[in-house]
Length: 213
Length: 300
Image (cartoon, rainbow over all chains, first blue to last red; front, side, top):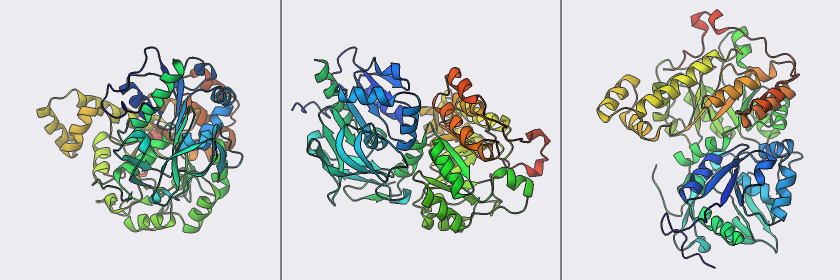
């Protein structure tokens, strides 16, 4: 795996010209993701309508309220084409609510809450409790290099079971899984987009570049 | 806030402000019962504000308005999965302590309730739970941030269904921010004095061009068009108080406002969701309210 370029300066990830990254902009901190991606040299499209999925090489699903994203994605006809695109291999990175959207199974979801699926995992929504249990900490994530990742968990979900097709990338000290990867899909319980941490986005952009080639 | 390695850190500014970041592009709805909270969540609210009376009723019934009964707050927390906010009176740090142990997710130190202290706001740095505070202008917003507020909402005039004050306050705050970005440093010292806000915060805003915390708008939003207008004026999201449950068809109106906030710049969508919503809250013109009854002048 070519991860040598990850985290070694702003120009380390060369983004191929014309590569377009979508950020799902129904609700949540999509502007923060867009900014990280732009700083890495990517062209960013905010995605709210089904036709906007056609032009993108990958998609980020931001943090926010997963039940709201689910509802709006279904109401405005995004959920069905998005599911198909994920099945077709579209690279997608989800943070927090985005991770929930990518999970095959949601535990403690709202009545009738649906995910897009793709990651062979079950995710427990709001697994730590109310906001006073939200926290920040450092995580070792070998796939991103030696430097620990400073991670912010906000009413965060955890990955409760990791199926055979998915791989855990990071765990808390108590062993609970908080980052996963499966082929072109990437998901984290925490929010690299609000801490100035760009290695996950670089790692994700590599998936897009590889798929392009 | 200090950074620490590997140990888990609770209640940092980043964690407090972070929850507000996740609410952006969303609608926070006032609810007075668990049943209303259910309707709000089903309609797509990103959070609910638990309170005993919506501002329109506080206005019409009068009397001292206080923090809600813990039983009511518990019942609302039990009903929904989305974050639950609750209001404490301005300066009433014990109400805030109570709300923190009840396990709400955000405290609104709110002018809608009767102030408990006409001089001091709550020292919000003392809490693990984050606070949102109202502001009518940039100086007020910065004073609240300096006291530890992790989110600001422009005040508007709650319980009126008249959006004009909300418009005025969001325009004022964003206009004052824009003005700071064009100033040289010597002018910023004076600006800080005039805003009655700490120089460091003023200088930070002059260089970033935005508040260091999320800015929602509140107070008088009653229609999808009102909500979209606030978004086009630069709000990160919208609080809707009396506007939903004082209307003819709360379910439909709530869902319509949620859609209008997501597609705030798409008049076709806003037109579509505005159809057949039934009666909006009757409302009261802000200009008809005698000055002592204005809520937005509470807080200093």
